[in-house]
Amino acid sequence: MKPIVVLKAVAFAAALLPAAALVYGYYTNDLTANPGDYITDQTGTWTLAMLVISLTVTPLRRITKWNELIKLRRMLGLFAFFYGTLHMLTWAWLFNLFDPTLMVEDVTKRPFITVGMATFLILLSLAVTSNRAAIRKLGRKWQTLHRLVYLAAIGGVVHFWWLVKADISEPQRWAVAVSVLLGFRVWWAWRTRPLPRS
Amino acid sequence: MLIKNAPDIRSSEITPKSIYLRRREFIQASAAALVGAGFGSLTGDALAQARTKLAGIKKGSPFNTTEKVNPFEHVASYNNFYEFGTGKDEPAVNARNFKTTPWTIEVEGLVAKPAKYALEDFIKPSVLEERIYRMRCVEAWSMVIPWVGIPLADVIKRVQPNGKAQFVEFLSLHDVGRMPFQRTDVLEWPYREGLRLDEANHPLTILAVGVFDEILPPQNGAPIRLVVPWKYGFKGGKSIVKMRFVERQPVNTWQKMAPQEYGFYANVNPQVDHPRWSQARERRLPEAANRTPTLMFNGYGDQVASLYTGLDLRKNY
Image (cartoon, rainbow over all chains, first blue to last red; front, side, top):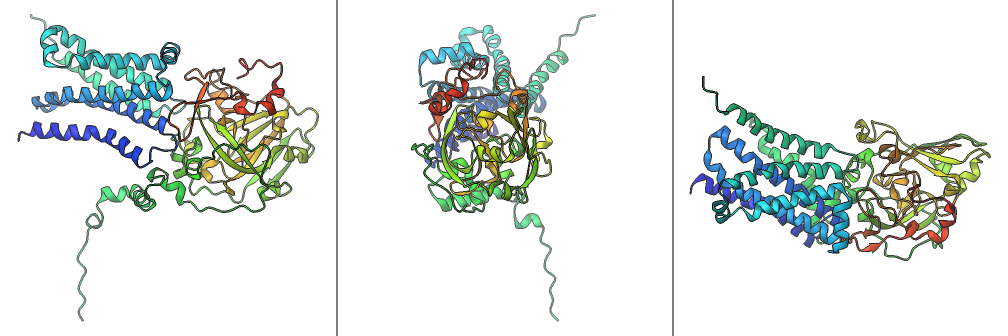
């Protein structure tokens, strides 16, 4: 089997582990004394983690010149959407009991929820346009649209930062990760800029 | 003689380092396996602590709630105690070896009898009472906890505040060597709380030294902490070393930290939201959903509402 196929299978299984851990924790009564908060934190953290991991694909590909790595990108991005969806549903269910009035109030009144919801909508729009048909149909616009993932990563960090009470060390670490990954792209674009003809 | 040199065994061959470094998780996982379907590995550390029974507890307080009490495993594994880490599961681990004997409490300020007390002498004149209270955290979760403690009013009567004293300030221990997270500046140390004198004198207000008929576990604020059941949990200063009677309203730690989010009064109030979440409902742990309506003054309105007549609770949150 080609190494990339193996790697993709391993990554797929690994990316399912956090969700499996939650299911296992549910059945073994091991989701802390506050399961609602724990599930929300875990699904939120893994959304951000999957976003960051998917953003490492391109830098890794450039550095290693192993171009096949690109085959992981869509899958990792869809996992970000998967965990983001779980996170959003947790919020809608556990925190708002699926009550539309409460949800609307939450989104409009609380900036960190507004940003979280906007980020989710970006992930949703990227997920529904991630298939071959959409890529073909959108043509050059597809890439422009999918650059919104950078905004989603920033949105995820802001959402986390605005939510914490006092200890900002964790969102800070995510901010550094996202800055490095976006910084790499700026640096790369500058390095490979078309040189002016003399 | 036949003495063979033992072959050199590299330590890495004995226990793989990755496993060695994860020994705590390993021990917890084993413990969880033994406990079986109970509360699992996440609480292994809390359960591992020595537990000491308290004697002579007066039971049956009329203030007790009849609601279902949360198990010890919840109370001792899920804590906000930033001196020992900001994660809820961290205090149970990091406070495990917190030394609370000897312990001294200093009473100072506008009192007839300022003094330093050994904890035993401070407690001894009062009868230990069980108080089963609802505990509503400002983060919108709640538990029911069987505290053991003494009425704060008892203490106040003994130290005799003078006519000028209007407030009591409570200072928690500040000792970086014993409270590892005081090395960080996540909060300003020591942790400070305060009450109006009439709030402090209210019969619901206690200084707790135990839970579940046992000595308070370190992560719950050992050896002595404040419990004010109609206020958000953060009002309950832990590991108290000083009570100061003062004329002017003190600034408590969280109020200083984020005055737009946390006030001095911090009375449980479903009508006044935290800027980042609603306070109208709560998660009665281990319930995962925000299903339980939050009651004004955490359901203690009949006892305490009269303390606040004429006070704008929207402004004085």
